[in-house]
Image (cartoon, rainbow, N blue to C red):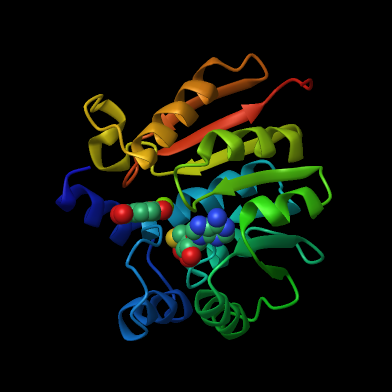
Length: 212
Ligand code: SAH
Ligand code: DHB
Ligand code: MG
């Protein structure tokens, strides 16, 4: 999106409170990669979860906890966000963020690589937000579909991957993973999906049918 329009949306609709502002600022202070969702994308995730009255949500890729705070804030008391992070330093900073946001009761951060942790979580999630490494995205697609309840939302960041989605010359593992994920999401008969062109593209799919 055009930067001025993005700023317009953010200022009008996605203004951050002090907690979110601080957590975002920590990426610079702690030398975390600045690859968190933007405020407008965070607001969209928050809105999508409210729309389905999500109670149990899974995130792959916590980083500093910025998207996690948006997700967890959409949950009712007793709701739970499980977020998976492989980098111990990221995990520690994310945990601090969740504590600062007063969300430690509502968030369970599991440290480890996604492919090790995913087989250990209990299925039936209302939403799964995928935002980690891109090469295994087709495998994350399968896990997402398996772990979602019927009526649940499959969400995946970086659908455009800085344009690599439409650059067939880019044969990098990341680009191949993103393109394969998008194809799966578009073609799976159990899913009604599209890409919302927010920031780097967000795949939003509703699991309307069960089945392998
Ligand atoms: N969702 C975050 C940004 C996540 S950045 C936000 O918007 O605020 C991607 C994160 O995924 C990084 O912290 C990285 O360490 C983590 N990650 C990458 N590969 C992973 C894997 N295989 N398993 C678990 N976490 C992974
Ligand atoms: C990048 C951005 C992301 O949102 C992400 O999840 C991974 C990488 C990037 O800009 O490289
Ligand atoms: Mg991302």
